Image 1 (cartoon, helix red, strand yellow):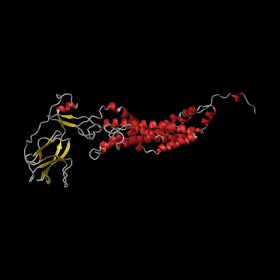
Image 2 (spheres, helix red, strand yellow):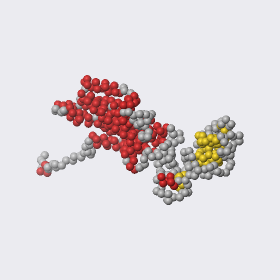
Image 3 (cartoon, helix red, strand yellow):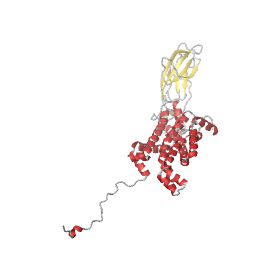
Image 4 (tube, rainbow, N blue to C red):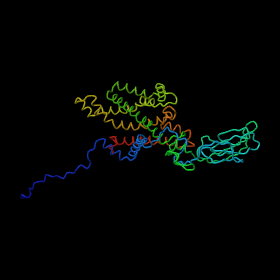
Length: 451
């Protein structure tokens, strides 16, 4: 077979090479992509950022002092009617009014409720009661307001901590010995919120008394999440409490995790008897009772009853909660110490600090971050628990735990005082736990290879 020149054409230097479809990613870039693919972890991350924004920037937006009391709105739930009728200044009452069975003279307002009645049959005197529940067969009249052993005094003016709402007044006949008899009259009274022009000016609701007149209506100060039992704004107290709770929840884990990293890395790298001694010391620290040392630290810091123990709590956490992190880091260092690239660095003359800081600790970063995100909710819960039992943050300093403790007393009548701080604790703990799960999956090399 003969070949011609056409059979020997030059081959083109260009080859059909397939391009790389995915660019090279660093360890952290790949971890971020895996974290974004985890919707629960990503939502938790945004929730944590939202809590930090609520804590740091919230007081700049909602400029209400968490310690200021609004005495016109005590234990008010969110969304309550804030309208108040402007009335004249208070004038004393001498009991004038029409006679008859138990009735209200004039209007029943938060300024005063004036009651007048006729003498009950066979009564040698009368006692006046007020209740927030109607009188039933058990004859629970409520709170005694006044007592008269003279049938010529048949009136009473109630000005004791009146709030808008429904009250049940009772006048009970007293026997010859002053004992309560079964003869009584009851009256249901709906109290309306009022204020005076002078009070409105003093509370900053209006600039001067010329803006409104008697008979006009005015809106009291807004409290989006209601008020507590002292009339303090719940939203402002939650923001102030978040600064305390998250300060302890983030600073304390950061400190004892850092100490645990250093302790565990030193023990794992040195090894031998030093490693055994350091780990036995960590076991000893684990066995120490946290509450006992919390009490001892409070005494050492001079924190008396009713005073906030933020610093003793912080010191107790840092001193007693580091062994778990130290054990994890020690295990990682023991594995990395036998790795080929570490041994190669040693053969090339790398110093100890270079090996630990350049090769070993960066490779434990994933474990440390995951540990930190799991320790933060634990610390927040510890602070809430200690404040709840009165050993942590004490009133008037707000924290979510101390607010929950205060809300327990009124949970049946005003549940929002307990629900809101408990809800913030639950959301924060859940968010950090889900974020920790997501970080563990994103930073674990075995999970990454499995994907």
